[in-house]
Each structure stands twice: as C-alpha cells, then as structure tokens.
Image 1 (spheres, rainbow, N blue to C red):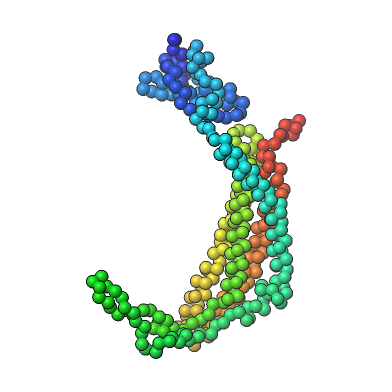
Image 2: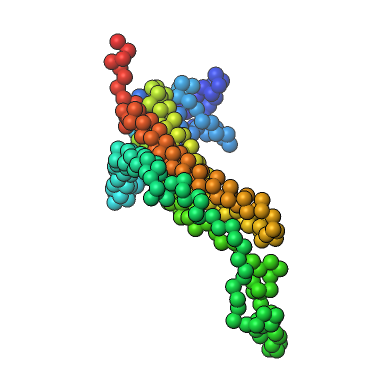
Amino acid sequence: MRSPRILVKEKPVRAEIASFSSWVDIDTKPAQEMYLLALLFRNGRRAYIVRDQAVIIGPTRTTEMPPYGSAAKEIATMDKELAAKLEAFQKQACADGENVVFRIFPAKVCRLQDKIKSAALPGSPYHHSQTSTTTDATVYPAPESSQTIGEPQSKKRKMDDGSQVSATTNDTQHARLPSIVHANKHMSALHATLKRECEELVSLTDQVKLWISLTMPKIEGGDNFGVQIQEEVIAELQRSQDSAFNLRDVARNDYLARAKICSKLIKYPNVEDYTLALQEHDDHQFYLARQHLNDLRNIYAVLTDLIHKNIAKIRAPRGNNGVALY
C-alpha cells in the first residue's frame, strides 16, 4: 500500500496512518466537513495532530478512515436506563426552575411587601415600639447553686495507674465576674426569621441557576447574544446568593458585638454609658432587621423582572434570527 503524502506546516513528509486516537463529536456543519482534525498521524517516534486543511489523503482514505463520529459513539456510550434517568432529571430541573420564576418569586415579592407594610402596625414584631421593651440592660447575680458558696464542687478523676484524684470542676459561682446580662430574645426571633428567608433565597436561586445552565447551547461560533443574556442572569443570581449569605451572617455579628458591650457592662456596672450603648445597639439591630426585609423584597423583585423580560432568550438563546437580517 502506498503511503500518503501529508503536508504539516507546509513541509511535505512521509507518514503512515497509525490509528484514530480520538474524535470530537460536533454537530456543526464546518466540523463535519473538517472532521480530520482529531486524526493522529505517526512518523517513526513523532506524532502530529494535523488539521484537515494541511492533509493530503492518499488511497487509504476510503479503507482506513471510519465514518464520522463512530469512534466517539463506541468510546463514550451511556446506558439507556441511565440516559433516561438523566433526561428525566433535566426535565424536572427545568420545570422546577420555571415554577420558581413564575410562581414562587412573584409570591415572595408580594408576601414580603405585605410584611413591610404591616410593620407600621403596633402588633407587628417589626414595629418601632418593640425596641423600648425588649432590651434588658440589668446585671443579674449568678444563680445560686445547691452547694454552699465557697465549697467548690469536686469529683473523682481516675488516673492511668488506677488511683483517683479529686478534681475541681468549673462553675459560674467560681468565675471572676459571675453576673449575668440576658440576651435580647426578640432580636433572636427576628434573626431566626431572617436566616430562614436567606436560606430559602439561596435554595430558590440554585434551582433557577441550574435551569438556565441546562438550557445553554454548545460553545461554538455564531449568534451568542442569547448566551450572553443567560450568563448575565446567572451572574445576577450569584450576586443575590452572595447577598443572602451576608444577611445570614448578621446574627453572628450582632451577638459578638453585643457580648462585648455586655462584658463591659458586667465589669463596670456603675458606668451608665455602657447601658445606653447596649440600648442603642439593640435599636440599631432592630432598624437593620426592618431594612433587611426591604433588601430581600428588592432582590426577589429584581430577579423576577430581569428573568421575565428576557425569558425568550433564556429559553431559546439561539433562536432563528434569520428574519432580522432582511
């Protein structure tokens, strides 16, 4: 059999067709016409990946070359049952994403808006009158123990050699400053509500991100305007998730800052400014809790508006735009 002549970088060399090592299964017309891109040609110990424009195929083309994509089908195959499960998962993910966008997001906007409006009513947990009754800056003494004060509670601790040694356990009555300042229970309830809302926001945006990602077409040339819209929507969803993560961390920051003020209040109970500082801290956190409702409502409203306005490009990012050319 006569060896083919192959042109690599405009230099004619002699080579033997050794094997078809890999195939790229691309459905575009240019790739079908140039599917020699992945052929491996070997000349001695040197191997070349040769583009089809630079290949001159000899008489071995019809006998050595497999049909386009056949090798890829043999290598990358999927079980029919597994493929059916994967397809069902993708369909369900798309259905869940559209349900979130067209039902849950608008409902969340309306519900949060109603909660914001009801904050002006005295019975609402977000009414400003709650701040004057929920902060307790009193320094309470430590609770009395069943043991006599001054007699430390002791227990036996077993050593490695079998002997027992009396060990004293830590207790609040032996602390340096055993006094207590109670937490703001009302703010703890508001923080719990905010955390639930943030966790729900993250879960919903995850479903929408998955839906949009599954509708993305193959990465190739051509009209990518719809794909850019999808990427921008996903970026906005990611920013919303970042905001939810930050809002969920508000409670931890509040407790840490409040604990520092309370420790100063216990150490210096005669300094009235620490009492005022604690009251102002709770008042500020209460104001932020009301503002966080507005932030969550705005996030849902912006996402709903952005996705609804671009729903056509999100569903079909590469629709038939040929009519627009004429």
